[in-house]
Picture 1 (cartoon, rainbow, N blue to C red):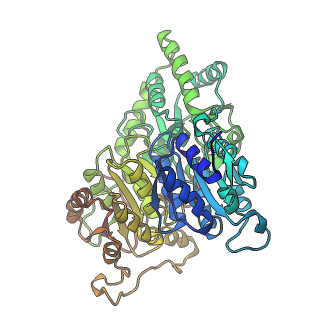
Picture 2: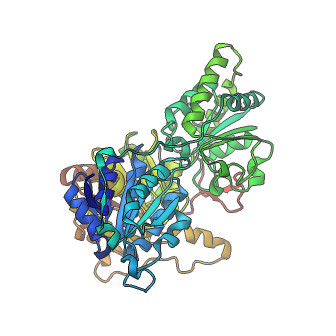
Picture 3: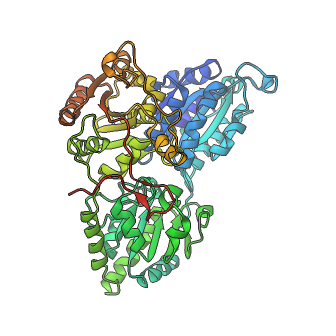
Length: 580
């Protein structure tokens, strides 16, 4: 039997599980693993500027392509604790990433050794499993189990903590004999699907709510086929946006308190039946549960059995992987269509499209400083249906979800549940690493952008091109809007007079200089007619120089974006008139 260090065995397992890219920061306690990574070859490594950034790069890498698993690496002390935000983000959105940390030697784990921390206990609530490996011979089994857990059931992250001496210990291990464990996912039965379709047949105004689980299961084509067979309109959730193209006649728009469409909410409130597939009834989608559920029958399909009934009790719950369920939904629907027993949903579907035509929010404003709506209008003109958008949180993301258009799965890459500021830059780098020839466009407000701006240097160093649209109002816009109910505007202004850039007025940080100082390109836009040419120039610069290119749009300081303050999806406050 071949002998090698446990660290080398771990690297060999990564490769046999399909890993070819990792993100991280080396340190004393993880250096044996890095030595094995270098000696083995086959895994490209991107050096992050912040370890939290490495975890978000891993997330973006996973989210960009079916089957990807992003890997982030660091020491277990401050590096491991920095990566907790990435693990929280990943578990909230059912994203598999593997976090590998280097720990102090086993003999001093309980002696307050330098940078020794019980990272497994810290990470336990935000991972599917977190393990400190105390015996070198267990390393292959722990890694094998990690990939099995990440892919099985509801996907999610795993942390493996490797003490320094464990990494260096030689073990018997033959990589040629290694095999990944079979993935386990619950599968719906035909009887369950037939019952769901029987309930569906009794309804008059049904909807499908398609969540991120459909994308995780790589089942968007099946979802569209089922919708087309039955004629049922589809409401994608924020995490499911892209499962059905925005211009598809059965796309009824998004529903919710913030990232929603007027026509989507209006259609949902008219519905009498909801089939939820791969969704978790997130509170920003449902709002008040009593309003959301009143007068409607619900069927909920989810890969995680304990998710069913967590928010409210459906009339029928089915524990199943979305792809397995949709294969049966399509099979039974085809049979029913051939037998002529499927109800005609034509008028209901047409009504959703009439609302879609009549309830569009206005985007065309010629104001200077810019209104954000105009930025998104020009983004739709500049970036085509192949564009992968990346965003996290704030008024910029909310407005982006209201105004942008997405046509394909994994083309809206958003941190939905955690929403940490600073996520967008590193996540976009991870997405662009996974799709180096694709069009990747990130969207940030100025505060999100400033949180992890240093990661732009990673894009410059490793030649990772993408376009970053920065909408700058020098405000914590979402928090300012939330503070309206408290009649205050407190500690949310980022404005100041920059002594080195008086031309910015009160907008403070000179993002163009900072971006250029990090080795990237930047364009500042102050007038609406400059937006489209700037986006076109940014695409050319990114292609020419192979670095991130930032387009900064200087916005009016205060814009209120449509959202509900009462938790009622029928009471979204609109601040602008409808589009004409």
